[in-house]
Image 1 (spheres, rainbow, N blue to C red):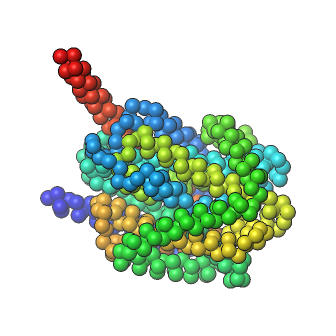
Image 2 (image 1 turned 120 degrees about the horizontal axis):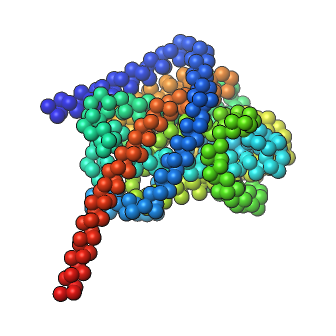
Image 3 (image 1 turned 45 degrees about the vertical axis):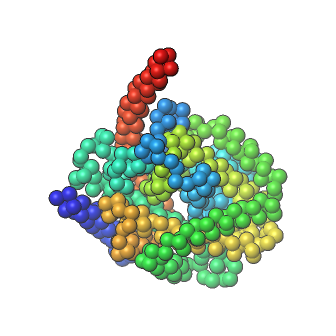
Length: 517
């Protein structure tokens, strides 16, 4: 009976999730303009109605993540008592770094600080105050908040899987508050929401990657920058990662992941050296200070009386909060998998430390270089985001080398993210199995690419509008799952902490009495 029940639930999650995605792809392909308009209307309503909710929720999650570092719960291990970490600390931190890197950092690393400098939240454009807000705002969007969400999702998964013996489904993390209902229709609903959020989150990254690859090819080689070329780029990359997913070339993906780190590190190092190094260091230092100094206020300020900042929040921070929320199952499953044997305290501190610091360094280096280049060559400020990075490269030494490295890095991120996502989606729709069938992975690989291209078609001239709308829409229902995960994790972990505390106290008392004898 258990086997029949298991297979039934697997088929339910797979069928429901794939049907929803398939329907969206068909509607978006047939009616791209209407699809884009409808998603835009829905996302606008969400940002205006639930902007306060996103800001408050992210702040609560961040507070909870910090609390775990100092709480006695932090002493618990993500695994059975006695389990040791699978990876050396240096390798583990490097993999957290890899999870923190992605197409988003390459795409927005220079363009976001430039955008904030030209249209800041509250300051006048292109002023010293705008410069300050540019770095503070970039740090807010890529700082502690997204990694707190990733960390909470990963903690729930790692704790339930490695310490409680559950499988890797999101629904199973809710057993402490839902009981055996997680094995019925309610659990299926939770898993479908997680799968849908993952598809949209990854599709947004794939769409952005296709836009920037096309922008780079256009700037360097004059290849047309349009939806047709972006579709060809998605098709070529899809063939590559589907071949990997079908053949199980896990070593190839490991090599590509290592290549990502090498290329990203090389690109960052060269930019730091040939860019305005002293200006980079100064803006990074003052930017971090300003970010920390205003962290609580800007985490909760929804600007009800300031239309300039309110409009800015809807365009940037609320969009990011949606994207990070929809991306959290994907990143959460990855960092949960590599963190077995770590204590909760060690995990929380590392997740809120290493990737965040890397983001600060990345945005400081690319943002400062980009703004300086734009001040000297105003045409850079007028470029679309997908070509801005290559325009900046053109104004500094080793421009061709940097452009080629950036294109290779984006393509490599594209392939590895898509391939990893097919595995995560396959696992989530195969009852948490660590070896989902190639057919299931192929279905999700095709779905990812299809929804990414449909969103590009529906996204107007730039292609970004529908991507942003999809991220905001998909995040709202899954955000309630994250709240439940946080409550369930605390309830179970705190109960176990109390139990072990009594047991450990008894052991210490026993040792003391033995010594006295």
